Length: 465
Image (spheres, helix red, strand yellow):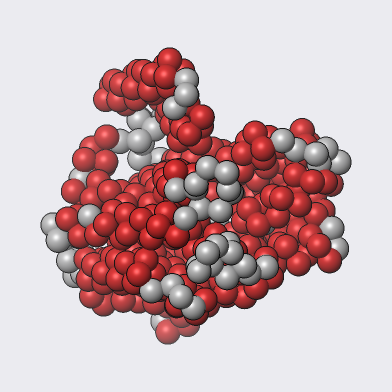
């Protein structure tokens, strides 16, 4: 009897190790583009508009693929969909690595964007193959490693691209992805597909949801330029509203809806989405503003740091973000999601406001950025693990996908807001933003993040019974 009960745990740990490796590689592959965009623009003779298009492809594809992957994982099995999805990602990574021109690189990035859907599929596998009391920690580990891989990618992309070539910054994480997919295929047990739902796929709901997400991501990404084109802006808003209304109408009547609206109406679900969205706005503003402040050399502020120095400054945040996943999972298991999320929000608010007023030394921002990374990891892990383990097992993928899509949208909004504030705070005749622009941005980020306390105070404790 002892052997039989220990065996699943042993298999589960091996599976988590393979999934963790896949999360690290995926996070790294997702993040290599951002720090090397200037290099790519020079080598591929890209215009600013083409550079902007390149940066939004992964978020758009991720927002589109993630709910579909989660739904199909719930229905047909997490491992089955995960290995197929990551095969597409590996092909995309190889295309990006070998790309001789911008159009080929764009195609590779579109395929790579599917990697965001790997997380909810990993959560399905973890929940089915680990005991309930261990699944929260395992989900936290996988989440933390994905974030840590993303930070590592940002740190290493520049040195790899400059020391080897731009091709290798895509090739190296892609090779690790391929190895990890093979390990997942060998080590992760097959999970039985769920047959409790009505047969068939809600294709109309899928198409409407996809169209709505694409329209929303384009609206967010192009918002600064659309301000000078009010008719186009209004047109996109009207289109988005029509798509959402149509999707809601279809889902209410579908026998097997793409996303069950009753699930979204559950207090824990919608409150988790609100909290995630607000937290990610504050995080994204810090992610955008702090490196800019390190790199700028203004009148009495900024440090004129090089790309390599900025990478070193980001290292403590990388460590904090990686540790936040497992720590948040263990803490949420013992104290509940509300305690973890509330603590994370308070830490982030204090860090953001402190950086706004105290940034005369580079280490001030290093500490502040690390605290933001830690707080974000704690909050997102608490929300993800709580949702993943509280919904029925056949809803794990779609429920966690909803949280991840909300995270993508929050990060997009925060980055756009940070960019708009710096643009507005740049005096005419110069390309250096005023110090007040950074101060204002960090204060706004802190105030927005503090609004999350309105959600946490009404949440249940979420402590497992």
